[in-house]
Image 1 (cartoon, one colour):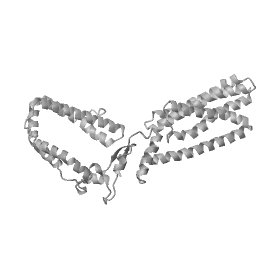
Image 2 (cartoon, rainbow, N blue to C red):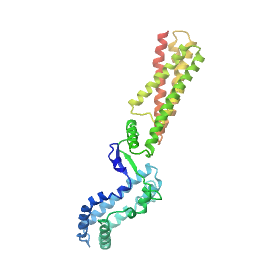
Image 3 (spheres, helix red, strand yellow):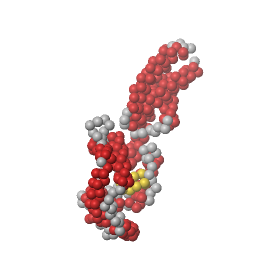
Image 4 (cartoon, helix red, strand yellow):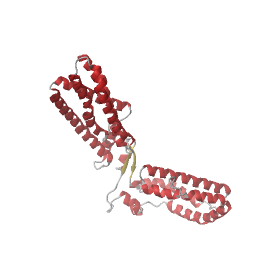
Length: 363
């Protein structure tokens, strides 16, 4: 199954036990290379001294090690991996806690200030460690076939169950499925053709998007129908109900278009804002139509000078409230806030631009 998955274009990597336990044929192909490595290690002469240049190179490698651990520390902090972040802080220090100092920096400073003593100590370390390292490397470069029972428990527990009769394969996509719905569908379909037992977030998200898409569409249509019926009962005439809904429909279309221009996509989170847009966006048209019906003809400027200010203030406060979610650490809330900010603003603009024009034509 792993071979089939690796041959699929939408799959970048398959992490399974075969990475540590290759097939017999694959192991036979590698034996000549392993023999060359074994011979090269066997013929290596161990050094019992350390030059000044090699000592300087060691200091540079220690600095590289420190920078790598700092990078791991930053990634752990961003990802919320507190245990990793705390352990890295013990090694390389913490900028927010002056008491925690870098052990590696202190070691580098000690070696630089005591170069001769450091070189002498490293020479002694080289005598014992080099021989041990050579023996370990020779054991690793063996031509004996690897068997299932040879694998350590840490690997077996990672890829198999307790009975050792079922195996786990982790499949990584070659593209960004969270930004491309077509790729998500193609990736999950490719996996389904190989095995129906494939599980994980991609299949779940595909089904979730499908359910939310269908149910959300039905809910939006039902909501619009109910809103229209309420407006009909309120205005007593279909004409005024339709006029009041025009800004909502136009604003909804503008919202989707502006999101597309801004590079935003409808997600599982921000799609929940669509029913709220219907409930909020309809208010502006309703207020203007009510005021228009209560005023005499030719009072369009007066209508938008008074009621227009009210709906402007209402729109701005609503946009600011939802817009504050844009600064949320979780991108889902940020996406919802941005969608609501655009949607409310679009409904207000459509009320001012389109509805005012329609009222002017009708008068």
